Image (cartoon, rainbow, N blue to C red; front, top):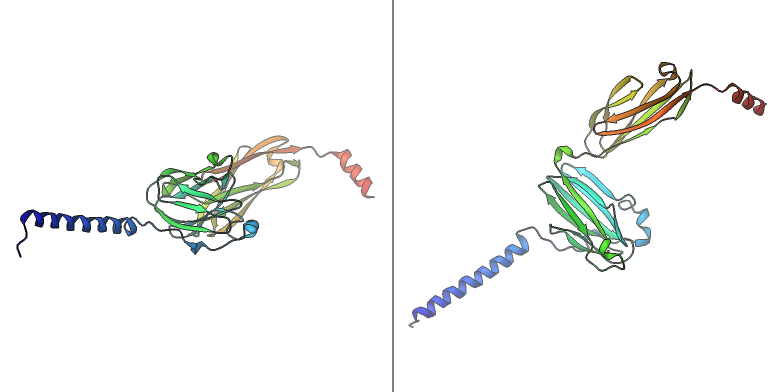
Length: 268
Ligand code: CUA
């Protein structure tokens, strides 16, 4: 059989095109790691979101190594939390559900884009290699203020990320001659132990205490403050842990003789 030269050229060109089209479709489907959101995330009763273990306190959770889980609740017209921070070089699994109507959770500039349907949990895992800032927005029309429904995802450099939280309990007032306690509570959201130093500055004194906060736990450091060392008046204090600090004022007051006498009478 004799095939004309041009016929052969067109046959080869058509074959190359067909193979090329199949290759691009295959690459698009499996190459960049794009996955459809399915029902893997499971069901949830939208009226019982506040009782759900994952969504009662939505936010970022460290699950070990470089893996994190982020629970997000969408509602008209906001996300909770609206600001999300994760470290670079992490693998983040998002769980998103809605309290009311259908929204979406779209992280602009990434392939994270899912409908958020009441009763369903959308689950998706993404790798963030580089630090960056991404907007989160809703692209399912959800009512009057749909256009204001937005959030932010910050991927910060690894050495700038931590999950430490500091809270301090202290009295406002102590009677001169008495002691009081300033208690710092350090929470460690990472799975690994955190070795750090808690410091208290009060008056012209700085006190430091080294602590090891267990992974996914917390540790209390109590500083006993003697009013006799401070003298009467207001004294500013600052408790510091890593980049976190909390401050307040402690007043050392004269014991009120009359008041305690009245109290005595009342008791008797
Ligand atoms: Cu939520 Cu649009």
